[in-house]
Image (cartoon, rainbow, N blue to C red; front, side, top):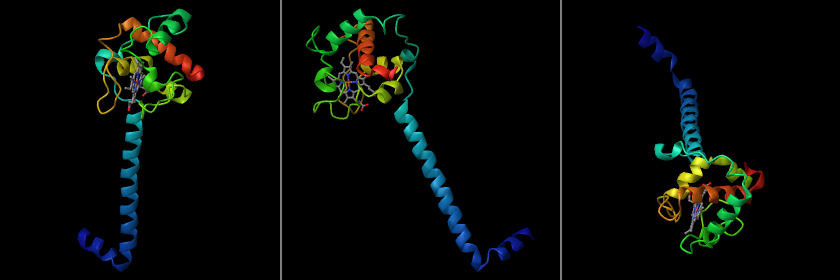
Length: 157
Ligand code: HEC
C-alpha cells in the first residue's frame, strides 16, 4: 500500500528533484574525497618507528646545531650528502629538486612536525627523487639538519 502511494507521488514532476538530489549527492562525495586527499597531502601517517621521535631538547635553538646542520645540508661534511643541490642553498627547489616544497616558506615549514621531517629525511620517498639518509647521517646529524631547515623559514615554527 505504501509503495503504491509512493509511486503515484513520483509522477512526471518528480524527475527534476530526483536529478538535483543526485547532483547534490555526487557533489558531497566528490567534496569528501577532495578533503580526504588534502588531508593526506598535509600530514601523511608517520610510521610507528618515527612517530615518537622528538628533537633532543635545546637542539632547535642551538646555534652550534644549526651551523652543523648547515654544513651537512651544503655538502661540506660529506659530499655524498648534499641537500642544497636539490633544495637550494635557501630552501627553494633547484631544477634537480623539481617537485620539492619550498623549505623557506613558513607555511611549508609549519605544516610538518619534526618527527615528520625526521622520517622524510631518514627514508626515501617512493616516486620522488628524495633519497634516504638513514645510512649516511646519524640521528643527531638528522636533527641538526632539521634545526637548520627551520632557520630557512624563520617564522615557520
Ligand atoms: C636528488 C634531490 C634531493 C636531494 C639530494 C634531497 N632532497 Fe629532500 N626532497 C626532494 C624532493 C623532490 C622532495 C619532495 C618529495 C615529495 O614529493 O613529497 C623532497 C622532500 C624533502 C622534505 C619534505 C618536505 C616537506 O615538507 O614535505 C624534507 C624535509 C627534505 N626533502 C629534506 C632534505 C634533506 C635534509 C636533504 C639532505 C640531507 C635532502 N632533502 C636531499 C629532493 C631531494
